[in-house]
Length: 214
Image (cartoon, helix red, strand yellow):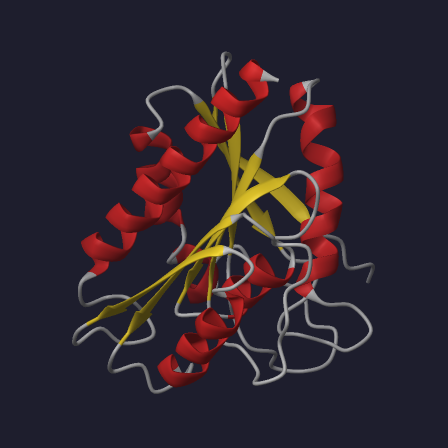
């Protein structure tokens, strides 16, 4: 079976000023296992994508990305799928717009590592599962938000905070620790949704303003 990524539109505003690409997490169960639209890691991003579309007030085009495979394989990672999506979106919309990435867990890691792509104006990482040697490139001056639950036992808040510290000299990074929240974002769900939506909207409005000036 050929494994391919898919883009699912959540809101395709006709007068969109920016694009939000929402990235799911999800660990691998076996090698080269396809992503199911019904898996929990995918479903938990739907309310976030819808909240962003509402927050955008008809000015943001929102897409959910279904990765080509589960987990993080060495030969093909979710970052490759993000790059594919960044190529497809201008073709779908028939124009190029600034993009904000919003991802959870491994999707949060992908959002940070892909934040340096030219089309990306900023990124939100929700409870990102990161490694100590992760080093996002070409993020100079870009706004980044890392939001992590203090009780996360799956993805390390300490690693995420350390990454934010390393990025501080290069990017406009904010690290927010949500007291009592765990990895699934069930507790304090509205805070995760609100902060992600507000940050993505503000980032893209500012990026559109800068494009208009130049």
